[in-house]
Amino acid sequence: MANTPQPGTRERVVRAASLLMQRQGYEGTGIKQVAQEAKATLGSVYHFFPGGKQELGVAAVQHADQEFAELLSTSLSAEADPAKAVVACAGELARLLRDSGWVDGCPISATALETTGRAPDIEQAVAEAFQHWRDLVAGTLREAGFPEGDARDLAITVISTLEGAELTAQVAKSETPLRVAGEHLARLIDSYKR
Amino acid sequence: MANTPQPGTRERVVRAASLLMQRQGYEGTGIKQVAQEAKATLGSVYHFFPGGKQELGVAAVQHADQEFAELLSTSLSAEADPAKAVVACAGELARLLRDSGWVDGCPISATALETTGRAPDIEQAVAEAFQHWRDLVAGTLREAGFPEGDARDLAITVISTLEGAELTAQVAKSETPLRVAGEHLARLIDSYKR
DNA sequence: CACAAGCTAGAACGAACGCTCTATTCAGTA
DNA sequence: TACTGAATAGAGCGTTCGTTCTAGCTTGTG
Image (cartoon, rainbow over all chains, first blue to last red):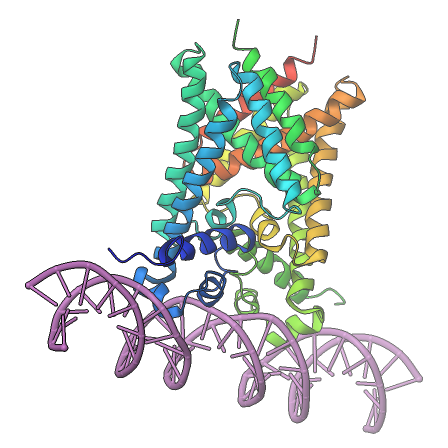
């Protein structure tokens, strides 16, 4: 198969789209800007994504889904105790957010909010990503001995709270909301442990 | 006589902008669309907001800030026990979200995410709104006898979690994330009560 | 070498964008 | 009645948007 130099054009386009949509949202990101950032041409973008901006948006969300899932997996498996693992995870998110100058928050929430009820394909990709992340947390809790129901409920709140704390931290340009949320989640998880 | 007919043009414009930006985000909302929805003309919009779209965005965020603060105040004062009050608040958010057909989530988060690092005026208005909401929750907790430090930390997590759960619920088109988050927040608050 | 398929390249289109501008109407005061 | 500033009205500016289109370039296989 044709091997293009380095990551390949399609991959570069998806990566650029994902990053730009994370920072500027879906509507705020132009296809020409994506092409330029990816060092590709407009023709290439429409070659790989004949469905246009929506199809590119779906690919960007799915890419972000995978990347964030890896970050989550790594953070969660760093500690055996799930409560401590969540604290570590929140800390890692805080570090990444600060190091980016408070611009790289959740990679899909901006896109999610802009497209609800107006782009079903993207909506579904976003829903699948959230479900995917919840499953990772629920799995970690289940492995640590939490009963199925508790694990599922806690996973919902863990992801929701991390999501909200990341937004809050980004807006306040402060790590505090993520740190505090991490501690509170640990406390909540521990309260189910007995 | 000196009373303007109906809500007045400026008020109608701000309300329309706030609603549209809540649903479509900042970039996804056009000034002409705002004018049309508000039954105003382009000239009127630029008469009241000579600073253009950014100034209108700031006004829309501030309007949403006030509206959400009222909702928060009402929900929180419905119950004497702050833990139960948070549950009631989450339930109210879930109800409103469902009744809107899953489109009316947090009124400013889409705008917040799209404009971070690119529109300082809007960024500041968003930060002030979040701070405002946190203060309301912290005040409720303080009145219920929680020490200052606990009240402030809990308020951070309560707002963050409600924010994240609302996003999660919107994406999943389900009340469950908000309901579960409400119960977990109550449990967390109670754990500080002893 | 030939040739199709995969990929790159960018000019061009109509529509929509934010915004400016001039003209007109309206309300209150002198 | 005449004047004035606020408010309304919308045509039109230059730009950018998503998208289409027709070429040309590369590359693996016959």
